[in-house]
Image (cartoon, rainbow, N blue to C red; front, side):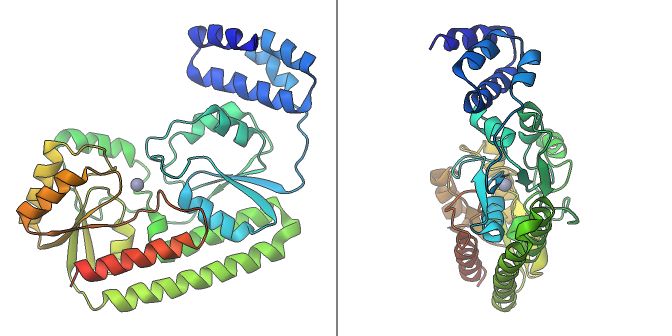
Length: 339
Ligand SMILES: [Zn+2]
């Protein structure tokens, strides 16, 4: 296509994000307008293209885009079959440092509703939404009315990473979905947002949300019953993902030595883990898929501590029931590790 040369010229002159905006506008224009209009749009400046992109056909079902896996699972559970639900961050891709794609901008440009976790987790979203230029978009913040935690779990850090931490978690720790009680609040927020955006399906959203919330209540009871048998369990994580879970079930204490999962642990991370084990009565080390397991295995041997996997659910299967499977597996892991 001759258009590609045009795109390449663009890339040299402008930032990647404006290229993304142009791509989206072209794609939107391509859906609703003739080839001739599309070609004309490519030859115009980005400002005039905005005008060309307006007439988009309304989808029959409400189109909902969600940011990453847990929010997708909760939204899919509430929406059932009455709305189309999509995910922006593909499972298996790191959400914390995610870079938006042109497809993401296109998805938001054509959506009715956008659901996010909030609490500063989706750093990619602000520019992506701006570039999508969808004035009719309804945004649902799933963490609305949830009070974020800051520094509840002691984190062993050097001075430099402390600064990074302040930057990253300016809005508090975002991992609220890992506490079944706060997950209920997120499901309720999503339900209310969907009802506001699509009142015609109110009854379905209410019934679906009620069923999922009931399952979350059962899960909460299971955590309470199981974890009261293992008091004072301190564990070390290499991802600051479990402070809400630990706070909910008082017998748990998380010491996070790394805030966001890394492919390679640094020597400082390893030293911080050793320091944490010396400082606290640590029962277990918890890793996650994607963390340098060879290094952690030898570390756990040196420290004479078991190494297990705790799932932050930032990745996994897209069936809403996956939340319960993964959380029950986490409970089993905690029960075994904390004995
Ligand atoms: Zn995380």
